Image (tube, rainbow, N blue to C red; front, top):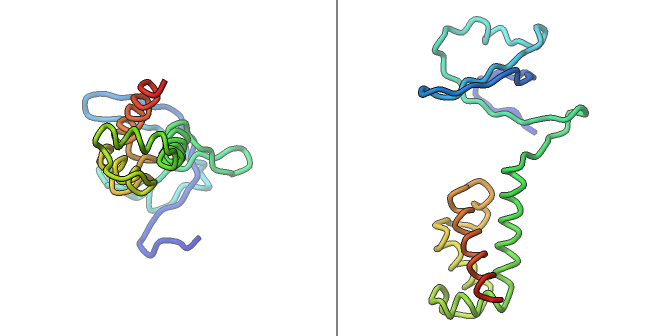
Length: 143
């Protein structure tokens, strides 16, 4: 993986605590003294940072969170559902699709969920909620 061309700080930290109030969420991270970047130590209070965090297991392997797993399942489910002829017919009967095809079903799902691509269901919780409601409606009406 290539490193960003912009200045950045890299360190491992452990989430020690977290709290919330009306101003926001406060996360306390514990950084080993040998890992603490000097630029972080010298930064003034109020310095803004872009932060990316990746949970690791004891073998330094990434851990997928529940939200990420649900998002990936929604993307897979949308793909399988759009290939389902029964779903395609249901979409056409409901006026969501004008054609019986995987492409037409995919376009209908994207329009209903207000996304450019079904892959957005992975990270877009609002779109994922709309998709899950659509899928549930289809399942309930297809029984």
